[in-house]
Image (cartoon, rainbow over all chains, first blue to last red; front, side, top):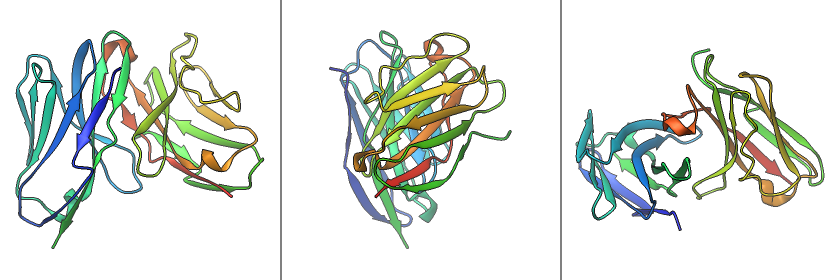
Amino acid sequence: KNQVEQSPQSLIILEGKNCTLQCNYTVSPFSNLRWYKQDTGRGPVSLTIMTFSENTKSNGRYTATLDADTKQSSLHITASQLSDSASYICVVYSSGTYKYIFGTGTRLKVLA
Amino acid sequence: GAGVSQSPSNKVTEKGKDVELRCDPISGHTALYWYRQRLGQGLEFLIYFQGNSAPDKSGLPSDRFSAERTGESVSTLTIQRTQQEDSAVYLCASSLKGQGFSETQYFGPGTRLLVL
């Protein structure tokens, strides 16, 4: 069954600290993986997209990694800011079913 | 427009009433998606429109749910005889091309539906 699991479910960190969010998937065949940021009361916004051949991709303080062999991805946030408080959603696209499979997200809270 | 817009932003209704939710996609985007997001849950696919092709309705949870789209513009999601379990945020997204191209989806702010 095509699934995307994220951990932790929620996370609280202090401003300025780093954190890493995890995404494990069983989607096959795999096409690409996206990380979205969803602020409270808003729709998700794309942060990064990674294809099978990409291992690392950065977008400012956000760095995503992908290990297609172990079917794992991580999103690392450096020097966190209060505005990073949001839900982070991992989405895998299956080229077999033409479907986007969404994880349940990690809710991050950055405290001053 | 600058982005995907949805209306209303919030809707409170009584059990058994019908509701209509509206989505205005980004101009020129041929693909449009509806998702449901229950509190603390992930996004649940409902329906997908691609140009003039027959929509993919495989995610609609029951025959109380239906959606229409006029050409490549506005879409409405209708929920008939609402139930309390329908309470959720309904998100609309659009992309330039269809699912087969695996493009980035641009999401609207959602409509928060509360069924009393």
